[in-house]
Amino acid sequence: MNCRQNNQGQKRAASRALNQNPPKKRKNADPIIDGENDVDEEDVDALETIKILKNGRRFIVITKDDEEEMKEKFRSYRERRRIRRSLPRRRVTMELDQLYKSNTDPAALYEHALKLANSSIHGKGVYAICDIQPRQKIIEYIGELILEADCDDREKHYLENGLAETYLFTMDDGIHAIDGTRIGNVSRYINHSCDPNCVVKTQKIEGLKHLFIVSRRHIEKGEELTYDYHLPEEEEKIPCLCGAKKCRKFLN
Ligand SMILES: [Zn+2]
Image (cartoon, rainbow, N blue to C red; front, side, top):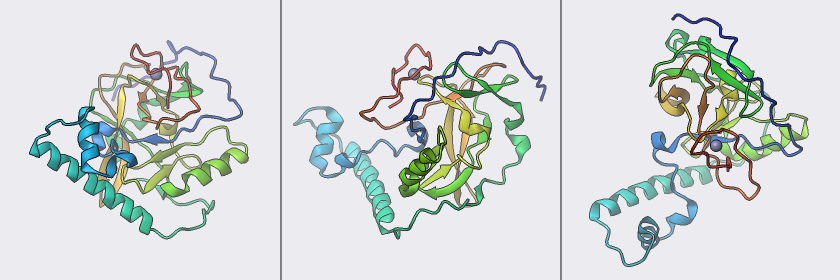
């Protein structure tokens, strides 16, 4: 690949001041890819509710296919919840777990074509140092493989111990998460955008799910890489500075 280091064109904008309650950066895989993240717990109770939610009002006829599709979604959601509940509760260990990483050939990725620099969106960002074609696997999101149930405790532990930010990525199985805080790679610095140039795809390799950042369009040399964090809504809002025309104004 013809990649030359690009030192131009990157705004050295002031990174957002780290406040006392730094934003949660727990990301979720893109729902377009995993297709299962869009079911809320409140939605699960009755099919009648589904009909109302799906159409926004009562007494609406839905097709048999719609109904089957919804039932299928809920079955898998219930199954995930059942598995999660059956897992033994354990004390959160802060011993460093092994690096969770696939054996993907580094030459098949664009990891070498990335550069860390200050970002106008937030703190440090990741930039392409050469053009990247659409649908290219760029880098794997690596770290410790942990239980999603342990995320809150880990986050608390890190913040209490002086870390300004944590880098937790919940997997679409609803059970696991990847914690890139202590042994992640540069992918953990990829910022959020409401109109991103990348998506996160889940890929099963040797029976295990791994997360890859993939380009969703042509990315020009010098461009900052972004993907949509899909943070859940929270009362305490985190402003979004992505600058996209269709910016949602808040990350959560
Ligand atoms: Zn935005």
